[in-house]
Amino acid sequence: MPHTLFIADLHLSTTEPAITAGFLAFLRRDALHADALYILGDLFEAWIGDDDPTPLHAQVAAALNDLHQHGVPCYFIHGNRDFLLGNRFAAAAGMTLLPEEQVLELYGQRVLIMHGDTLCTDDEAYQQFRRRVHQRWLQKLFLALPLSLRQKIAARMRADSRQANSGKSLTIMDVNDNAVYQAMSRQRVHCLIHGHTHRPAVHQFDIDGQRAERLVLGAWHEEGSMVRLDATGATLITFPF
Ligand code: LP5
Ligand code: MN
Image (tube, rainbow, N blue to C red):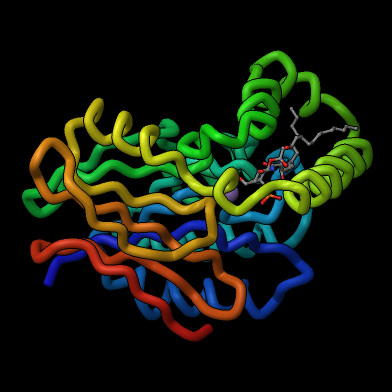
């Protein structure tokens, strides 16, 4: 049956070769047979610029480009770790960059996709951090710094983030129900797919008297996670690397 796949939060890095292997296997085994692949952010653990020569990046670009060459389009929405991923990498990977929210019309259904961090409105410290690092001028300044300095700043941000998270409650770091409702009604959808929270689940609820669902993709720690969408609906699937 014709279908489309969605993934997020792989957090690929050179220190986690098993996840990279799992992703490359997923591309060959699953994505190759899909109508399209949507990557909903945090494909990489941290992205400090398309000029980063880490061999893993070229390897991932080549694998994604191979998918593209086989006629499977791939789309990318930025996460909070790889929001600096730019046109140069996207072109090398044959990927199309999408805005932070996108509505798809697939198999007769309207589906909203996003990374999911913008729904965590109770996490005011994060939303403030996000507004700061999404300023174009600051990004340009950062990208103009030497690679070694960018690496240091990113490592510092990751450490600060870990420290900040250890003091935050789980509810603060989850999505805000009203933000979910606002986004879905604004976009007139009854299906939302996102990642970010690392809390894979299918939430079913009502929006204005109609059944609605929110599928949360899992992070790729010990196993892979994807959503498969076809004419019968959306399904959350986990699979071993
Ligand atoms: O990522 P994760 O899962 O740990 O937590 C996220 C939120 N944290 C982040 C920060 C990222 O991890 C950092 C990524 C670096 C990317 C590359 C560098 C690009 C730099 C570009 C500059 C223009 O997204 C975390 C949320 C959590 O998800 C759950 O939703 O809570 O939010 C925070 O931790 C934000 C903190 O609350 C406040 C800010 C701490 C960082 C301060 C930066 C200091 C900079 C120092 C510079 C020398
Ligand atoms: Mn994220």
